[in-house]
Image (cartoon, rainbow, N blue to C red; front, side):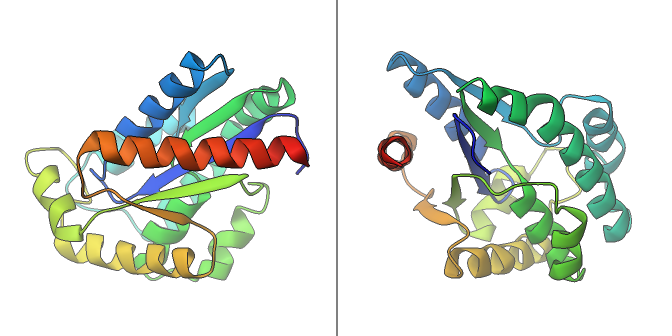
Length: 202
């Protein structure tokens, strides 16, 4: 999809630091005089709020089909109301999670990834997708004490397996997230600035 802006998504396991690095990236870009905004999935709209309250903040997961469909509906709303308008306005949009999270989490739960892609066909691909890579054991340790349906090592291991496939096929660009935050943030910013320079040339 051709837009004036640049669309970046940041992916990773739960508690991987992706939210921290998405926010830091936006601040770093803004300090350079660039018009960058942060957004997240689930979105801040009605469906996203429902997902946070009734799907994610519970001890037992709902059926993965329900998860996938709800996230797909929220994503359509997110793209239409926030992402597309921002890109058309020339902004750099940094999304904390995107369609790859559906592929990873619901795919790891056993859903067919082709079907997940089909119900998300309106979710156009980002210009750049960064994966903050941490060991699943680290994710589970960081999740302790949080109210999260994903606080199980088996879930995180399976999700990492799908993310590894997405890295291998070139959908995601990995960054080692199991390092000091400043080092990770520096690498993320370098990747994005390089991508921005290439985007402007074409």
